[in-house]
Length: 68
Image (cartoon, rainbow, N blue to C red; front, top):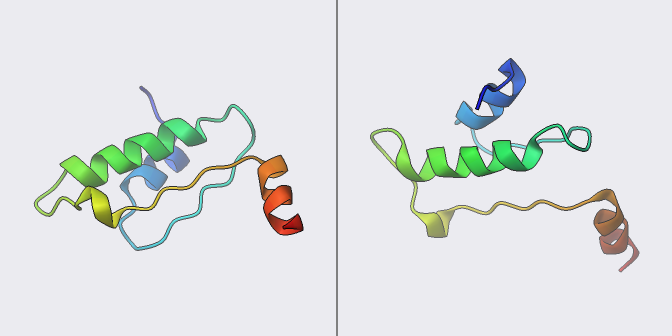
């Protein structure tokens, strides 16, 4: 997969918490998936799966959460 600079940055950034917000069909889920794979498998200090929280939802779902 060929990533844009912004996508590659989101995949590789290791500075802490990361929020990815972009238009529909822009590859957010693919970027999130690649980021998790990278965290689990890459580098000298892979992160255990039980230390990762990845959440994705639509605007409609976010509105439901706010309403509740």
